Length: 466
Image (cartoon, rainbow, N blue to C red; front, side):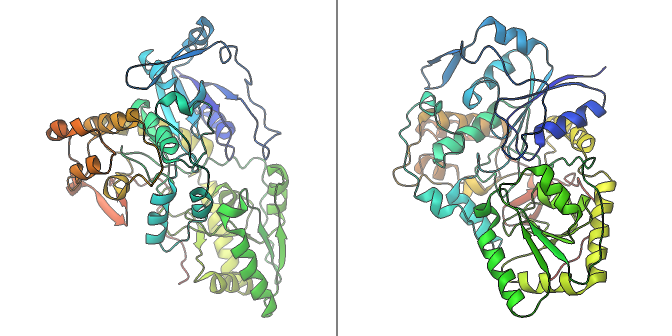
């Protein structure tokens, strides 16, 4: 019998829309709820757009500084319809995830899917990205953002989930880790992670993307950043200008603040998509593969490993010019890369039903302690920067998560108390914190510790340019 599923309540990279398609294709009853449409996906339609309980919910604070919401009866009537709730990008039914404890108390299954900025701490991200030879583009902006005042959870209710304050990002991560049945994210973003988690990548619906592999001698290069700062557009454009000045022949199309359906039409007419210089590969990379383009992006196969073997040619600032020159001049190589990408899409590794099934599989694997990633960056390197608040309820949640999900056996737990990341009384419970059996895990790279079953994706390796 099919499950009743609600997906929402934010739209990032078509995740809510495409996941709804995927679960429906698997035979489940699905509603999609988005409170505010994305500027890039304004044409997408969802089954729900409004609820009547948001303005009628009141909020109190318990003795631990945690928010206790009191929603109206209509909230419970609404929730009763569904078995599973899948929330994207730090969103949920009520502000700042405060309904997650309520949903769990009602016996509901909750999946939290984090997409990036809402969980990525700038200090730890700088460490992670540097260890993979990458520049973290948000660091200075985040560092210079005005500090917040926060002593209890209620202080965050009116704050954007994207504010870079450590307490704000940690609230998003810890609330998901503490109350969700499974957490999805990606290592370059999930730098605050304590609990083992999963990664699926975006789901890509190709029904609106035509495939064409032009094979032009003078190719069209497309770059369409959703966030020019994050994608490092300035660096990409500067290096392309230098290549053009040195005689490399190509036509460049730069699309910014353009609706997604327009971008997808332009992809079909392009030869090459340059996604980003940052860690990983975004939705544009998958759309580029679907449209028959050779795709270049920040996919080294380790720092953001899943799904495996995405046919994205890895680019860094060091190899960018060599990679672009090869793909522009070598039509055969470019065509082979485009064909690999289209084959990957046609195999369905990132299709909506494939990602939907992977979420179901993850819920089963979670109960078997077979998650994709076992994070250690926070426990090894986490600190509280000067003038950053750290409300006690988050220290309490840190300890609760460790007691339930364990830590790496090499974790220096007293350090976390010294750094103010665990409550002083936590030392009395150190012996009750489980240690992971790392003999069954694989160290794939800096801060990348995976389970052997973390194989989602293609088994076929992709080309590399040094």
